[in-house]
Length: 277
Length: 315
Picture 1 (cartoon, each protein chain N blue to C red):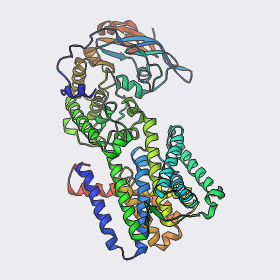
Picture 2: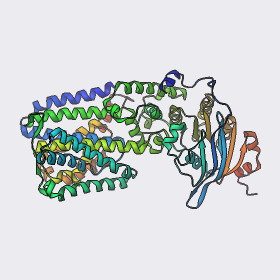
Picture 3: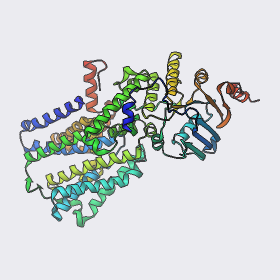
Picture 4: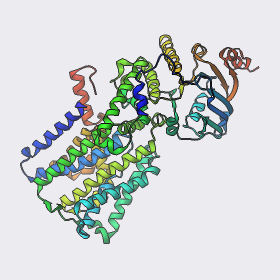
């Protein structure tokens, strides 16, 4: 495993790896997924698949169940019914840290930054599953652990550069501006080297320039072969980035398909304009 | 990294020079007790300050170490180091057994659960009179390591100072490692830590056990040094005292824990007012710390110095 990392010194390669499967078997399959909160179905009998190597957006009005769906996929919530299959394995109800080990990574709608750490340490936590996490070597600061830790710090700094945060490497996360923290979460999620990256409203609260920049970052991530699932309200970004869109309303599937198809779908238009027809 | 060794070196120098400034054994005694408390607090700070998990029961583990030593060495004539290790192992086993269920709790609930553990341990020590001597306590043999008897304040000082240095070194190593980052991460955001692959339950249990072992070892040494151990050393008020030292010195600051332990050990001995109203004073210090310097003494001072010397320095 470590040999692989040593060879992958470039933070975000320009070209997708030759072996990256494009639109092969689905990386994620959701079957009849439901989650109930006190009698209300936040996600109701939802089924869809996400092909490897694509950018897949999930849209819908507030309260449509998008974040709940993320929490179900990443194991933060247990589903009331249905199944989640990741990379051919049934991962329903699996703990988040196990899912992370399988290659699932995410960001959060409301920032979940480790404010008690520096920026680069935040990203280094993303390397957790690739590092020596035993107690005794840590207490004794064994040279092998220190070496890998230095490599992890270098890699974290590279990833920060890749998302445009090079000037914040040693900064305390608590003293960074909001827009930078949004990117820091992305760098941290990338540090885990995920197969599937779920981004929960990465552009929320950003100005037009920052939105453009984050759109470019997401594009570059997708170009490296990482499958991206995007929850976002900014339709320009969604339309520009997505290969596929899933529209939700009241926890149910409203429409699904290519961006231009979904944008024309009468149900989607109605949900967004608030028509009750 | 140099930053880390600098602090450790400074502590070593202070510990080496301190006996020169202490006029007699009364002060040396205070330094030894402060050092033993500091060892507990450095461990407790890993749990409370870095991992953000409160414990109001750590005096219980101090008591387990102290009584394991008292019973095994004085009654059963075990070698001291073996008894110390047995006490540490017992503390680790008990800490591990309770860690998974109680560390799922958060905030007040966790505080209550750890309080309960401390109380149970101190009740057992108080009521198992046949083994522990009950409320009167037990006389403990002096520390004997491979035939060499540790005797007198001066020798004890160096033993405790050396062990404190090792403890601080271990703690600093841990904090700046993948384990330490996992602990700080689960403090910062448990859900984010989990989704990045951190098995938070495992790391909480790990640090709970580790801090219990530090407390237990200090307890064993205290028993030998004092020559007498009573259940009061394991009770709730002692736990509160330890937490107060950590909070006062500075949560998530290893050297802060040392400073907090030193000041709050020495102050009651020097000021009679403090001694007479010790627990009231502890409460007052805790309140004033939370209101006026919630980060604790050392981080607050460090912040002031940093603000004075430069804009935007490093941590």
